[in-house]
Length: 228
Image (cartoon, rainbow, N blue to C red; front, side, top):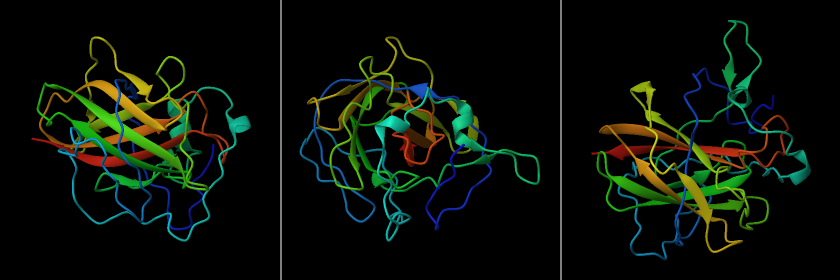
């Protein structure tokens, strides 16, 4: 089980909610690291659910991890989110803090992640996320993260006030599509939030890879997201 490498990030005790897979159409928008804002190139997409707050800076001054495709060993499971039990006997999550705004760096300082959404977020209405992922080490797009079946870009999404309340399943099931190919831009749909409130949306990348090695391609980044 890997442990976050950032010296500014400590482990927290949190339960592991149900992992839900996301999914796709097409489009493009810019990406960012923790020190910049996303550059939007698709006027149809904004961030209507974005929660404005202090910009996360946990990767500033921290050497980024260079991901190694050969460190992708086996599929990720719920156990990949937990380190061995601490003194109190409870599992210790390796997830970092949930971030404000719509751009930041993943928990382990491997990727910059930004998102937009469309159309305007409403309860029980189908919507789409666009997620842009770039490697922090060299700024190159993280390509192929969704896999050939579109199931390797996924999320955990739950109400921040009730972690047991997660996104409902959709028909057809959610899928992720990278478009254009090789861009590191992932369109994810359909997504339906079934309740108003502040949600936590955690994007998982390269979900086919276990997160047991520090340089595994698997990555995760969580944002607060408001549904009116």
